[in-house]
Image (cartoon, rainbow, N blue to C red; front, side, top):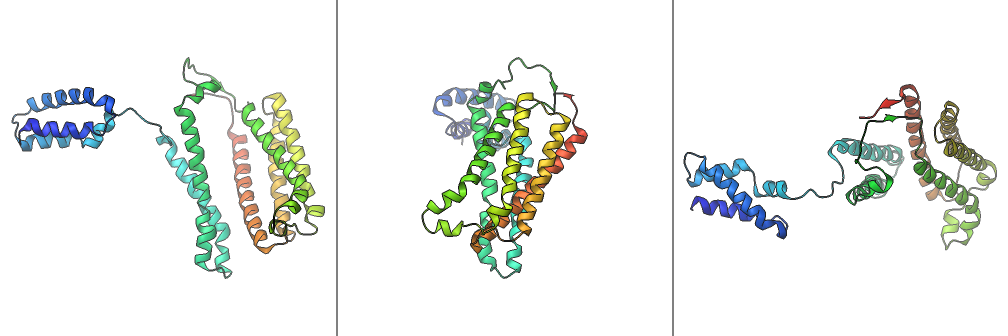
Length: 301
């Protein structure tokens, strides 16, 4: 085969991997570049041309160089963190549910319920990451004043709060309070068998559940003060840490104090869920205490 025919076949293979509107321009540029490279070689036979093209890259690799960058879902610097958080979440859920196998639950039954079911966590992370990537791709950062135009070094104050994120947190707590208060009246109106499945143990709401409402209201009040001030104070920081400790104590008391639901199947799922929530609260508590030791204003990079 003529060396020019080999180059033409190579360029055609690259072009078919590119958007139609870019093919002509890229093809002209690539033929010229490869022609110049071939002219610099001492000999121009088939073996020499094939060696040159292999050094230049496969058609797929070359097309990737010319193709405009698409939407990056997980930036390279975040890949390791994404993998670690995903694996840690799945591992934690397995650690909480695998003891069922040692207490008589068939391994296949565990695998097709809790085992595979734990993959909701990396799926949830992937969907959140995809949503964030789409917002970056459409330029949503500029909607919130986060574009890179006019960048200048600034001092990052770790005590300053993001009022938007704080508002979302307060709304979540308000929804949680409303659901908890309304749940005893909502459950009986659900279609069968939901009222039976989600019926609470006789003394749970009356004796053991009410401290959660107090904690939620107190935490909501702390966040309201934080919203007004716009920054953390030492008292607010320690108050936030105190709420973590209080929630751990309350959820631990729920687990140790007897049944929460009357249905055994719902009770098992609720206990595993509470154990998972306690693990996340404990991790958050450790991180908060660590940041209290290391946080100080610093120059952004």
